[in-house]
Length: 484
Image (cartoon, rainbow, N blue to C red; front, side):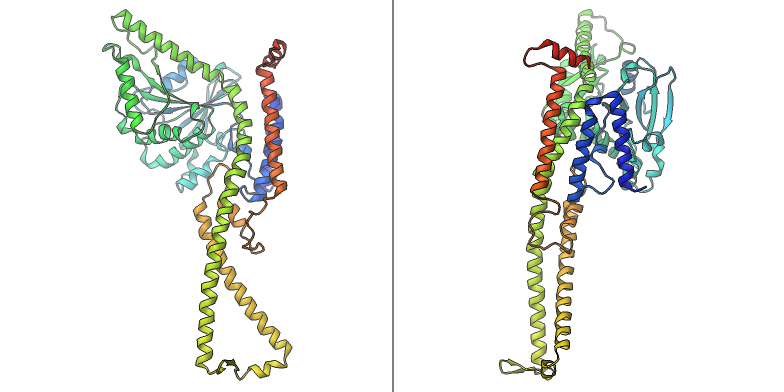
């Protein structure tokens, strides 16, 4: 089966699933197909690739941070099930994907269950790991596992618990998966251990979970949580602890955002001063309710995010990919013309010097001995002209191909809208003139197809708004939408 047919089967299965769980998104898959066709025509996507696989169609909540930050305890409390092992030391070095179990059994499945199932956001993640760390792709079970739990809190959601960031031999692969998770997540809970206000030993965590958050246009999905804050109750210095963390994170590039504080009642030891403890509990409860409200809202946010991603991709193709390709093509054309001029100029000078050396000139008249024999031989003359033309064309295409590959390397292949390097190489094929300014596959019709996708996005958003709100004040419409 070809990659294109495999992808089409995967999209059909996705639509069948959406018909059961979220019918409003069924037509969205067709719009992603249209985006795929445009991107494949431009060379941004290869045959068998789809933008629909770059997002999670299930609401995805990730819990990230260091091993001592109490992530597992939080997850167990949230689920109401003792699913994850807890401890002050690293007790699990794999990413754990937690999903709903329809029976009362808790099961642990290997990483292959995720890597080989296209319904989950880690489908074929082993290939990415292999590209980052050679030989590690086959060890997918060292990085991923899936646990199913009979908790209604994860019905219709995916929850991901991350390992620590201190395994040097697996660090690149671990961080590659972390970036993948962050990209797909609707909500990212970033846990820090409030008992250690100096984060100097967590550079990887800060780089990927703090600086990375500020570089994103969806940084609002990050919630920074100071866990185990109850340890400061005896000194009653809650504000000082929070301030120290904020200062440390600002130094790492976090210029916005707020902290939530948490601690586990089962593990906390109340202090004698009831007023101080009541203040801590009140602040904890308020922040916990805010976190739960965000978790409860991910189902709606996921629908809007999927639709918004579709419009964002259409805009990125037209406003980022196409201008960059045009600029690269212009640079390529200038470099080829300059190189051609230098190459053929030097070649002409060399031929002139050779002709002078062989005495082919009589004053300013070019008159080599063999010229007269060609005068009456049309076939020989034509053959020489063809050979000269082929040599010239061969040199020209050698030059343009070399410059094309050099520019393509600088364009990269990991942009969210696709492989810009591949698209550029498609626009520099031998049948395309260097004077063509528009990328291959880009035309007024293509722009119209992107406009149609954007219009479809607006209709989807309006339909969603009709389900969840009623600007006209019609309570019946909003009620009907909420029931749906």
